[in-house]
Image 1 (tube, rainbow, N blue to C red):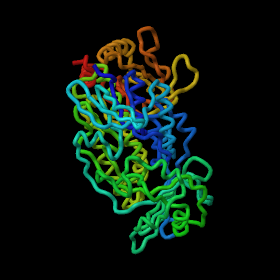
Image 2: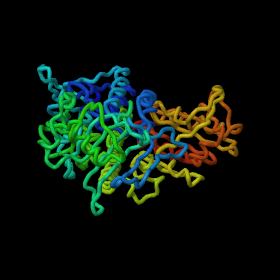
Image 3: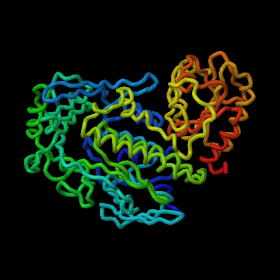
Image 4: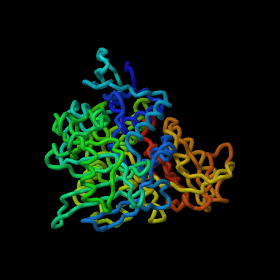
Length: 568
């Protein structure tokens, strides 16, 4: 008998996301972290629109929006001259833009949400070792308080323990890649300049077309606050010795003393010497697009960057996510966001497995879906780090949507499809199986007088089945109840159904019908390219699982067979 269903190792944004999504589904979980206190570094800052969509479903988006700073774009300077400006403009169906929110604020918000679900982070608790068999995982946890080591029996374990992951090493997974040769100085300061608020400032000095100095200023929430980073002097002694006790007190415990790591992974904040304000100002004096004085240094550090990728996302009953599986340059703010979506992808599948609802092979789809995403992100961020995002050959709209993580999809996943229908509108191709489910607005119900969004229906913890009928469909009223009941039975009750119909047409709500949603402005029809009568199944993580004609209900049930055990 296991003590707990799932043990989560690491209480950064990735581990907290996994724990919240498990707890929301009633899964017994514990989450441990080796740090006695949360770090106060802004290790990651950029929040992508897709992550805000995830937080909407998780119930924390309002807190995030209240604490965040809008991220409007990027201005690039070379040798003091502005060479490009990128404005982050997204399609109108995307409900959120880009944001800046320091990682410690992300962790605060997620920790509070997890506490509201009855789960607290167990700090100063370090995973020493674990073993697994066909039934459970046996983990040994050491406490910094001097208590005796604790043995925890869990049905599953998730390693969200960073670039130097004990879980990854214990599993024997490879972590291929390399380190960039340069070190970087980083600091949190105030800059009182006339440059537009909300834009990342990237300023380079080049000689013969090659960059020999670099300054990146990312806006942070607060009065004139920026996280600035720059190439560190070749001699680490040139960075001086920080007078900020905060910089030392919160140094990343994932890194070893000095500028390296005992496991050969040179990535993250480094302990030891940290830059003083004068060191940062020296680079600002040379590279800032206009004269500016840095003030109110809150913390500083030196960090290294590596790019690495695992060969597998887990073995047996143990999985990894986030930096434990992939590390790469911070270009475009992809790391934390990719890790959060790792956890979001895994948690709903693991919850089904815990409850005995998961079909054989469902957990294997985690690696099948997320490993190719990480491989693409690592490769792209390395290219952008070397040449700049502005050198991307794709058109600007595609680049922005990709950076927003709105183009992430799983069309080759073993658990998506089939599709017996195709969108009527070429612009709705993303609504094919494996694609991100588009949002749409101006939906109505028979009772509420205000319009609502499709995403308002997707905040539950299970699948959502949308049964669509256009104005020409006359038999929907008799077919919809039958399909809804059959699908819910096959999904072990882990599914909600809505009927989506044009305004003034189609079936009306009665005791047998699923709840009816009226597509008053035709936005659902346009976003999904819906026509005739079809079923569109949306997964708990906001991706299209399948879409089939209602005359082929066998195809819908075949798809549910891949997800749910009782459908075998």
